[in-house]
Image 1: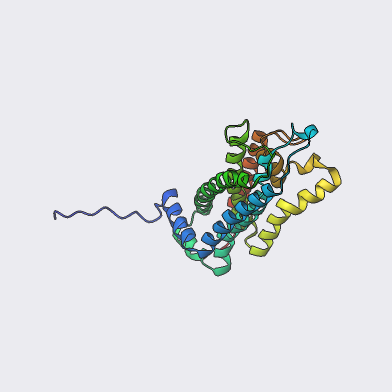
Image 2 (image 1 turned 45 degrees about the vertical axis):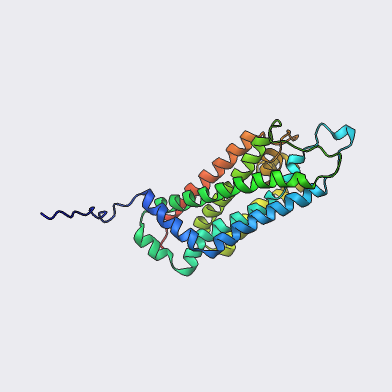
Length: 265
């Protein structure tokens, strides 16, 4: 027996979530589109928040109780969600369009595990970026406020919750993009479905039924439930809205995982 001993190699097929996640992390960080998309999210939300606050005026006395500058400073979430959601779609459909999915499935044949690894890695990255940009926007936006406009403080009631949930919202939309990519597997169609879910359907339903149905859609939940420090009439409460978004993501990823097991690469 030699003095030198090596660690036994991992038996064939004995891979786990950590191995799949590490592979997905290497792929995600090696794509230039990832960096540029996340930079665009940060810059877009910061600029939107500052511009919106610069155009925010002091409320009239009869509206002072409902005036919520926190909702204004976090307005950039409407733009950030699109960029993060599209990036989530591309994380899945990009492999199908390039044919790289065959190599990925050869390494990790367990498709639900593979999807879970993609969602876990992408969710962790977008959660970190979402929280950073939400807090950065919150602290940068008030610098552009005019005189007489109340300046929100992080310690005010509901403010910290609004900022934290807004950052988390970006990650949830990114995971919806992952799920849509897994279900549709076609980039243009998946992005179209994402845009319809985030913008077209809520706008159409708002015009037809008001907020009765539209308040259950992600963008309406973000704007009227999560990114506010004061309650909005006829909207879901913040934690109910956040819980519904989590259910949407779990259901969509579950459907994506189920469909992946019944399709060829």
